[in-house]
Length: 155
Image (cartoon, rainbow, N blue to C red; front, top):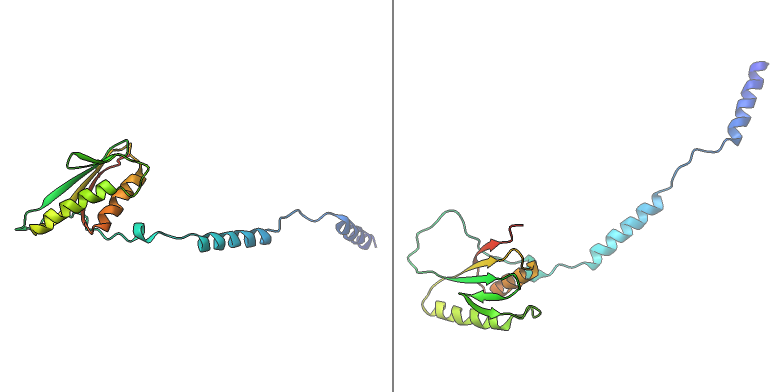
């Protein structure tokens, strides 16, 4: 009898005990998946910066009979650009760089008239902005200069 009274008392206490605390995270998971889908659907990649086909220099050197005229392009810390030690763009607010385009067009006409392959050596100052370097690479891709060597941005 005493055992049955004890069991009934334990059952009554269990009825009135508060349940263990817990969090329902199912709505949180739903919201995070909705945000993920939203950001994936609204973001877009710019094709001009993701699909640049450039031939980077390799370690192996193949003998070539043609003379190569390298264009030395320098990106300075203040954002100005010089080609063969001649400053062609000082306006850092304009991403189009018309003077740089004109200089590249002139050099390419000279190179193609002598059947030479255009090669560009791009040197960037460590304090220059990365966006300015991307603008230079985009301009080289626009002129179909695919032989590019880069130096700079060590940090």
